[in-house]
Amino acid sequence: NAGVTQTPKFQVLKTGQSMTLQCAQDMNHEYMSWYRQDPGMGLRLIHYSVGAGITDQGEVPNGYNVSRSTTEDFPLRLLSAAPSQTSVYFCASSYGVAGIEQFFGPGTRLTVL
Amino acid sequence: ELKVEQNPLFLSMQEGKNYTIYCNYSTTSDRLYWYRQDPGKSLESLFVLLSNGAVKQEGRLMASLDTKARLSTLHITAAVHDLSATYFCAPRGSNYKLTFGKGTLLTVNP
Image (cartoon, rainbow over all chains, first blue to last red; front, side, top):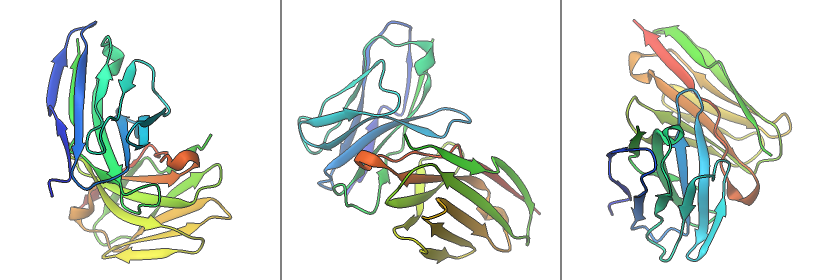
């Protein structure tokens, strides 16, 4: 199993550009989520999904869209990048809402100029 | 809304000493996670605490959970340099969402 994979590892954008951060898992996990990590802030939940076709907002959803068309993939879209979205983004998954372990991907470091 | 207060935020220890990191949370949670993060790396799961009174130990780290007090602790025994990292607690609240503390940056000095 590859676990949770994220691409790209690093990305630099200009203000106003859009892009998609990719997240995939090969463990047949139902629950997937996106977090952003900023210095001194811990991790904050952006969006999450409890299964294919079902998504919901987390703590800081503004400026981001998600969709879950398959169990494996959970992409995060930045519609119009802003410097405030400069952060490290982590994707995580677990086996259903009762799943004990949350598996985190390696992260994507995004800089918006 | 679940709020998490973790303290201290910075902890500088000497090797061989003991210390405790505290994690207070504001509303009911059905489980609590502890994670370790090394600089530039992802999060590594340390413990999952599922019930009141749960205690788990791995090496020099021991975590406990008191759901009535809404408090979890991560105790470090006889610290060694390899334990230097940032430690996060994350209780799980409504809709199965994790809320993370701000993290404790632990530095263990020789």
